[in-house]
Length: 102
Image (tube, rainbow, N blue to C red; front, side, top):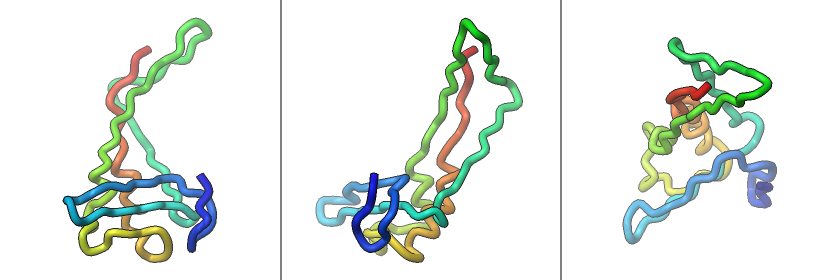
């Protein structure tokens, strides 16, 4: 998705919704400086790559972790600048490796 607003570029995470009947929020995270990676490890399982079977990796995503230490009521919109730093830094904690089917 290409953003044509203030912070032009690609949006790699978009979260929009309603806090209650009178308050909505809009977070569009983009720009290379806000792109984060997550390293997921499992001590019990490993994906086995074979020619006849493709492993399935099940990931968990907890969207609420995006908003750790953020109030969408006091900061309902984050689409550019410093407002993107905190949610971007929270992205790696959102993902968990639940299990692997080999």
